[in-house]
Image (cartoon, rainbow, N blue to C red; front, top):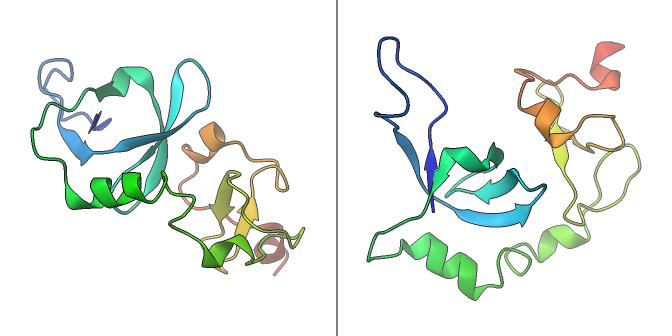
Length: 132
């Protein structure tokens, strides 16, 4: 699957000139229109109209590795016991957001931030950093 870029160059039609961010793998279907996508070095949430099927004959090595390891769950064995957030619980596949000031990770549900709201946040500041 190709992930199309959401940025638009002034004077260019985004329907005719859709740049792409590279091949990606659909990790999770959040809603009928929103998908969680894994790119080579990041994971993001995007709308279904920003994606197109990949027609390359050669699949990149990182995607082959991702698929053979079971879609990502087997990729992070050490992190399953690592604790995060104010709740001090592990990741468990839930949406998380990182504070851009203290670098601590928080479950979105614990700090009342959804995955779609996080897309609009330029720099997230946790309560601890806000109180400093």
